[in-house]
Length: 349
Image (cartoon, rainbow, N blue to C red):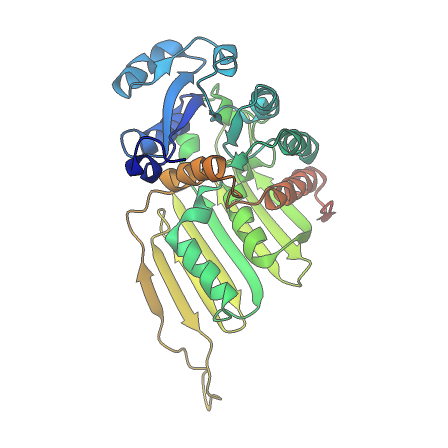
């Protein structure tokens, strides 16, 4: 039955969300959609430091409440977005699911596979959307890599090499939760390396085993630099270097049998495809001309929030499969174990 005229059918249903945690990243998520989206809107918020967030919420017309329980009990909230310390994710996500709220969790989902499985199973049984914030999957450079992997232009994946670094250790206070060793097992991998692992899982498949080494370059409570070597079931290999103790940088190179794809710059905006040589060399192996594409100005956070809203509204799968997230948590466990034992560790499959 047609209601409120034809225009009603053309307007998307607005998802009403609550943000939990208004630190740097929580505010970034709110800013990504505030006044810019017809599909999702943050209408309520709670944070541990209310006084620091009052002006921010007032300017963005987000009601600031005193407790998470007030959000869970609200009947006008469709979804909860968690931008909170990693150690709180399991308890908070399970509470949201029990309150019949869809859940978006900033990466990592939890800090081990067992707790991640518990959250995923609870969401499955409740029929609710569980989304995890691997925003880089939405970037046009990654989409271009995906297209070339699917249509055969890349060939079979031989190896993947990732560098993901920031200088956050220099300005995060030692008593900040992000500096805690409990919140960052595996060193810098927890903060930044998980993104590179997620990209590798999508394009190289399931990981067989890992060798991880961590280091501490700045005085502080946790390791700030991590290097991980990976072997995949497909036969491909991988290398992830991540650090929060140096200049900010991002590079992801996928080596295929028909060429390589390099995605670089901190906003992932530069895409380079270098094809393999096609003519037999008489001297040095020739390097055919590169193909360079630029994808600047893309808002990954708005894209992932939009995808979350559409998964709720349209009952379609969120673009980051929960099976990939859970395999990533199994690899996470192996990386932490390897860094502690100094050995190659098999991934639980």
